[in-house]
Image 1 (cartoon, rainbow, N blue to C red):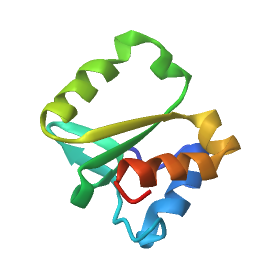
Image 2 (image 1 turned 135 degrees about the horizontal axis):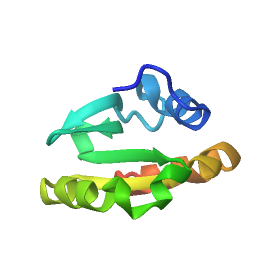
Image 3 (image 1 turned 90 degrees about the horizontal axis):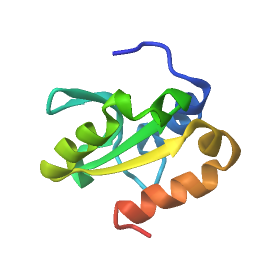
Image 4 (image 1 turned 180 degrees about the vertical axis):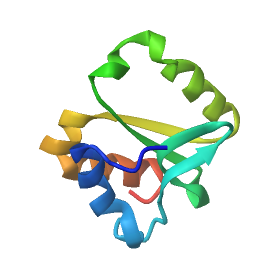
Length: 102
């Protein structure tokens, strides 16, 4: 678990925290199936991950992690840091749609 968020994670967390996004209840650094996900909405079984350049390398295990979460019924959304920084409205729109509210 990391205490310090990246600038992209902080920007997204400011949109998600305290039910600010369409009343969805997100938790930060949430444990699921032996993994710690960036953000999770347990009610909708929705995971949101914010990825930097280190995630472009398949060695990171993101595919196996995503597969495991999906097998447990979670929907996993991944956004690049630069997408969150440059187009937070579109990122939030995708999250709302994935939660079945859009």
